[in-house]
Image (tube, rainbow, N blue to C red; front, side, top):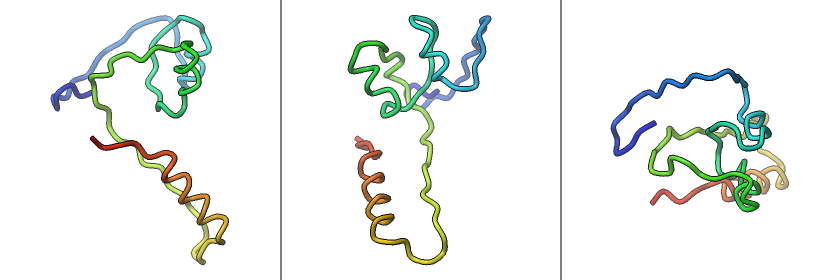
Length: 92
């Protein structure tokens, strides 16, 4: 996590462990998880989740569309273009 470009580590302790934040968000009212906004936008809109630590910046995660070496079909190309636009966030 990086507040104001200063890197630091936060140690957490507890009796719960999960390999996916989805498990933690299923436990109503328990815990903090780091998820992409697009992954939890419905829960945020329905007030089932609340954002926390919004002043912190996190490392960017890249998403790749992989297909065979030949040019993709128009449908696949359109889908990749749509996803690139839909999943992009403003940089400012």
